[in-house]
Image (cartoon, rainbow, N blue to C red; front, side):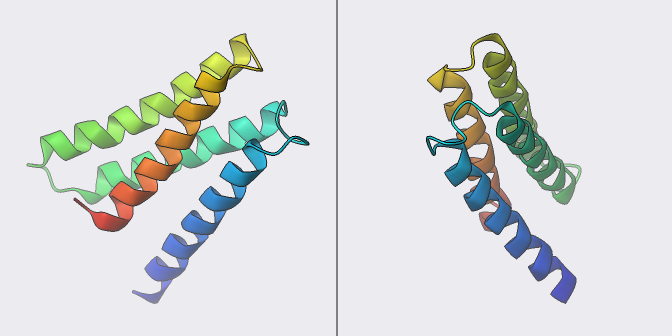
Length: 105
């Protein structure tokens, strides 16, 4: 149980750190930060998806949609680096995914 708490705290800290870096002026156009945000969003979506039992189809679909939105945000960032839409999709994927994982709604 202790290792799970450490993983949850590390995911939350990484989410806050990467979201903060993505919106600072120094790292605004850095594609590496967006790739790390996408990987974090996919990791959170995977953990959330696998944490629900077999009968919770709606919750699993929501978790999968959060992972897809992370990939969509990265795709938008590849097409146009200054696009705010890509950053917003990545932020929604990570922050809503963390909330969904922590609350377990």
